[in-house]
Figure 1: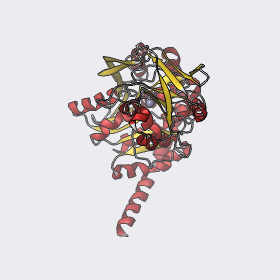
Figure 2: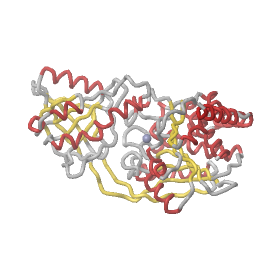
Figure 3: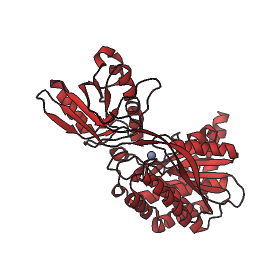
Length: 452
Ligand SMILES: [Zn+2]
């Protein structure tokens, strides 16, 4: 009882501290500055329309490196540099998927090879489709039933979760493991129902992985209505599929993450805010993660513009290769270790440029509770959820070193309609929602810088 009382008194004390008049005035100034003068939306238009999608290893990615370097300078960074990182190069090339019904006619299906998948080397590979609705169902299939077949993993993206990231987490293993599971039982290739919250025929790509010592057969995704139609056809007849694709890994290449920072007046410890500069090779990588890049640059610009005297280094990291290797995040963590740079806090924004709803906090309870004690300051900006415990993919190496890590949590209802698709375009981003995300990031960094 005593302990409980002690904890709650501490929390009340922190909350009172968090609601200081000075901080709430500063929060308002930050939001007024960003909503009126924010450059993030215009910069996102440049990135998406002038450069477009920018898969690691592509020419477009290299252009985006130069672009981000310039934007960080324009925002007023005291120092901007490129961090070398070796990245895997994957290319899509031409691809097509056809199905043939019992009447013999071939029909083309909208599809995307999954990222990192090998293709068919430009040759037709065909076979009869067998469908499974779950991993459990697949596990029960004897190898002779799968041999020389095409396995269609038709596991639906659950509509039951309110937070769509939970549905994504629930279904993601189908995308990542379908090819190796199919290969182990002698199948020819795998078709996966897209990880999509939408009911349309748009296929979603995304990273898959091969298990060691298992033959590298192709895996492709189809949209949810295409999957439903295929399921309906399979109920009444045998269907064959034919895949022809050229995708595959093309070795490694030297590339860069882009980093900019403003000097701290008190010490050399670092606060990181970042997103990933690369995207998949379809659409424009607007929500994923152009939004996170321009929001992170906005944080730096706002500190400079408002003349906030930050105590610590505030550093923006535009990570390379999040989508198909996380090599930028890994290299950043390695460099922090080598240079023994003290990091106070790191936050990533990589969940779409939608209105912010919360900040996930992956750190010890003392620090979590301190941040939660500031939550009333965030309420007028629609940011209320500080309960989740995770952080950005690029930050896992930092988190593993014990550095407090976090991720901005925007409204998730529309993200998986367009995630990793041709539909992830600038037009799907709302200026105010994007800038409110940048506002929440600037506010949390302001509080961490002042209090830690
Ligand atoms: Zn992303």
